Image: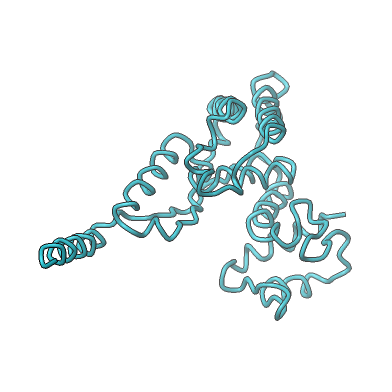
Length: 239
């Protein structure tokens, strides 16, 4: 019995020491978001965010077990490896050839079932894609790659106008923060339909910033003033 207690104590001490050598869990600044740059249909954007962004972006939502060594070593290693292969927060929109190659590769891996990884979907079943969803994502990715590669695709790779850029940024913010209540198409789920809002700029900005007790989260501490303005501008485009 004494020997078992000594062994148990040694294991506990070793476990405690391991917590001091946890790897860094980082979320670098987003440079150029894939969804903002490519503007897929809302339902596809929601699938990309759910199935891909935890590992392949700089917006990883680190799970509790990702803070506990030695499990954290594997979690951080997997995310760092995924980001090195494909970083959706650093999308090469200014390099059409590279972007087309990444789109094609993404489509092939999603269609084949290689991505998202099975070990990830076992822990995150919400990220598991159906066969139809895989086909829809892969078809869209392949189509976008073909547009860029074709002579006519040069116009698609042109820098967006200021108005288009604002809409894309606002849409990306909406897909990140609002879809769980208002739906990917903004027609409402737990929250109301946001199309054809008869609200002033000030009313929309105030509601986003302050929320509504018991009904909507306040985003003042999560979004900057510029981001709230971009989100407000996007809502005005929903007709």
